[in-house]
Structure formats: structure tokens, C-alpha cells
Image 1: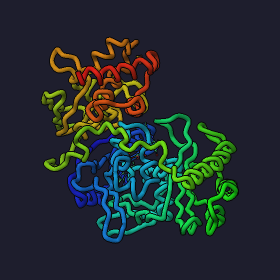
Image 2: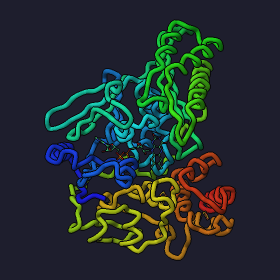
Image 3: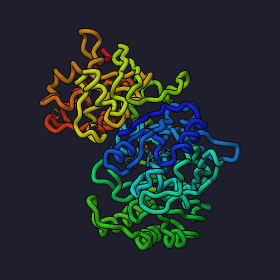
Image 4: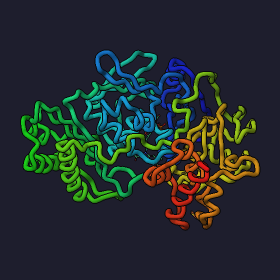
Length: 472
Ligand SMILES: Cc1cc2nc3c(=O)[nH]c(=O)nc-3n(C[C@H](O)[C@H](O)[C@H](O)COP(=O)(O)OP(=O)(O)OC[C@H]3O[C@@H](n4cnc5c(N)ncnc54)[C@H](O)[C@@H]3O)c2cc1C
Ligand code: FES
Ligand code: FES
């Protein structure tokens, strides 16, 4: 899929390669969008990928002395979802990141990648637009700041130049009189792209609204403001009548299309219903309802990226990928142009990890990379250079099965077994993160894993039993 893969360790190195190669090179972060685009032929002529995920310091979320929040380009959705700072000062973004994909996708997918892919259905653009965020774009030519409002030119089109790297996402933190939320309508609870999404932020003066911001996703070529509703709400009290009128006005901004996920008329109706629900939730102080205090991330103990001692590496058909898999060292002289899933199965001969969809949807390929659960089909193999991988073959301790493996056998949580390696990996990582998970937490942990024959009751029961076994 690519000729050369560069694991970069400094921003300057990235900018130099981008300036030399132009649109033949492209930055890769979590790869959860880019890999699929490349497979679908959307990026012809691309021969070099520049991986920026190991550049130290890019995965930080900070608050500066002017109350501006900065989100580094390597901040993943799970880092946002579990950030206490953002929960307090930018809740709509936290909610949106938590609604992206499933834990394994959120462990790799970044907010920066989400902004740059620029699909009108991408979840974090809507709250960041409502927060009036800006991005900092850097190249060897210099640095510029662009407000998100001016960043988008159309469906999947931005003003980012081929030689530029996004180095910061920034916005003013919400004050104590500002309340906001994000709501998403999708065809299922996880792993589903928005049919529509809405972000609402109200600035209150006592009980009346000083300023209202309402942004809408998936109802126009780019994320839009519901300007009529915003103007109507200013100066009003948040009564049932006002909420209803504002929700109806929001519809006039929406210019949705019919597509595979929804009809335009359903989208228009949902804009009204969900704007009303968001306003209602804010009016009763319930805007964070349904969001767990500590979302399940499957990140393991090592929450930030392991990048400290890594030196840059370039991978092509003559170079080596060195990894440790299940405690054993491997040196691969082939496979640098494929996915980690294919490297594990075809080059390492570890066929326990399964390929179900090869699109990040089914979770059958779940493995741990540097302690985090990830989908191996969504990781370029050279990204695994100098990492530690654990596959289902490494879950048992010698002859002693892992408690989740024992429980799956005892509870009959396996029929064809094709999905089982993925479920076992997610379940094992969950018990590491939360040794006594609630039913909700178990369900959250396996939202990225699909089973088409056992059904989920026995699998959930097996994970509950594994938790008890582990405790015993
Ligand atoms: C199964 C599945 C489910 C998904 N569910 C959702 C969902 O529910 N909601 C949603 O919004 N999205 C969803 N996505 C899409 C995707 O996961 C997100 O858009 C993610 O945030 C992309 O981030 P990334 O780091 O993986 O980007 P990448 O794929 O690495 O990059 C995306 C684009 O951004 C560019 N890029 C990345 N970082 C930089 C940078 N610093 N500077 C310049 N260019 C850069 C890349 O060149 C590329 O063009 C899903 C994807 C999958 C596979
Ligand atoms: S998620 Fe990787 S094969 Fe389905
Ligand atoms: S056991 Fe067959 S798909 Fe899950």
C-alpha cells in the first residue's frame, strides 16, 4: 500500500519530508481513516507515510494561563474521553470522543485525524466548532492559525496544504456559567457513524441565556451553525415553549441528503428532536447523563504513548521490523508494506488473531500493542517496530489458561470460535483496567467485538465469571 514508512521522532523531520515530497507523502496518526482511504484508492500517488505517533509530547492536553485548552495532534479519543480537565472544561468534546467507534479504535484514532478527514459526519468537529476552536498548521514555510470555521472547504476538503502538519488544536475553556453537551444519532450504540449530531453550548446570565451556540453535523457538506435558533435563544429563559421553538428553527439550517444511513427527512426531524433533548438536558442540569465517570478505555496501565527512548526508523522492502511478540523477539525482513494483522498471521505464523472484516469493525483482530487493546487490521506493520505485542497465543501463563479463557470454556461462550480471540483480548484488558466490572462496563468493553453465533449473553456471563475467578 505504501513504498516507504517513516517512524518520525521530531516535528522538524516530518516537515522536511513533507516539503520535499509534497502530496507523495502523508502524515499518519492512528491510521483508522487513512488505511481505509488508501485501500479504497482515494489517495493515488501516495508512496510515503510519515508516522507521527512517537514524537514525544504530542499527546498532551494542557490549559494555559489564558484559560485556553491545547490538544496535541496525537491526543486520541480515549485520552479525551478520560481527561478530567476536559470533562470539567469542555464536556461536549469529551462526549463526542467517547461516542467514536469502540475502545480499540479510540486507542488509536486522534482528534486531529478526525478534524482533517473532514467528513461532515465526524463527531469531534461539531463540538470543536461550537467551542470556536482553532488549529495551528506548521510547515517549513512557517506557522499559521486557522479557525475551524475557515478550515473546511467542502466534504472531506480542508485548507491544509500538502506540506503542513497540524500541531495544535486550541479553544477557550468553558466558564462556570457555560453549559454544553453533544448528542449523536446513529444506527447502533457503537461503531456507527453519525446519522446526525448536535453540539449545544449556552452561556447563562442568571436563568436567562446570554449566548447560544448550536452546531450540526451530517446535515450539510460541512459542520454548520443553526444561526436562526442561536439568535432566537439569546436573552430567553429556557422554558418548554422556547426549547420547542428553538428546535424547530434549528431545522431550517439543515440541508441534509438521502444516503445509505438515513433519508434527508429523517435527518431533518432528528435535528429537531435531538436539539430539543440537548436543550432540555441542559435546562435540568442533566447534560452529562449517561456518560460514565471513568469510561472504559482498554488502554492498560500505560496511558500515554511509549515514545521516550525510540529513535527514528525508515521501513521499505529491504528493512527490518523488530518486535517482541508474547515475550519473544522477532525480526521481520518482509511485511513492511502490510498491516500488523497480516504480519502476525502471514509472517509470524500467529494465526490465533483473526481477520473478520479488515476494516476495524469486528474486533476479531484485537491484540495489545504496548499495553493498549487495538485492532491489528488498522495498524501499519512498521508501526509495530520496537513495540511489545501480545496476541491471544500469549494470554495463557504457560499451561495455565487466563481466567477469561477458562470462563469462556466453562460457560460455553464459544460456538464457531472465530470471534473468540478478539473477545478474550478485550475481556482480559478490561479485567486489568477494572477487576470487578459492572454489567455496563463489560458491555462498553466489548462494543468493538462482534459475535455472529454465540450471542452476547454467554460472553457477558463468562466475563463476569472470569472476574470472580480472578479475584479468587
Ligand atoms: C471501525 C471504525 C469506526 C469509526 N467510528 C467513528 C465514529 O463513530 N465517529 C467518527 O467521527 N469517526 C469514526 N471513525 C473514523 C476515525 O476513527 C476517526 O476519524 C479518527 O479520529 C481518525 O484519526 P486517526 O488518528 O486514525 O487519523 P489517520 O487515519 O491517521 O489520519 C486521518 C487524516 O489526517 C491526516 N493527519 C493526521 N494527523 C495529522 C497531523 N497532525 N497533521 C496533518 N495531517 C494529519 C492524515 O494524513 C489523514 O489524511 C471510525 C473508523 C473506524 C475504522
Ligand atoms: S476489526 Fe480487524 S478484522 Fe475486523
Ligand atoms: S462464536 Fe462464532 S462468531 Fe462468535
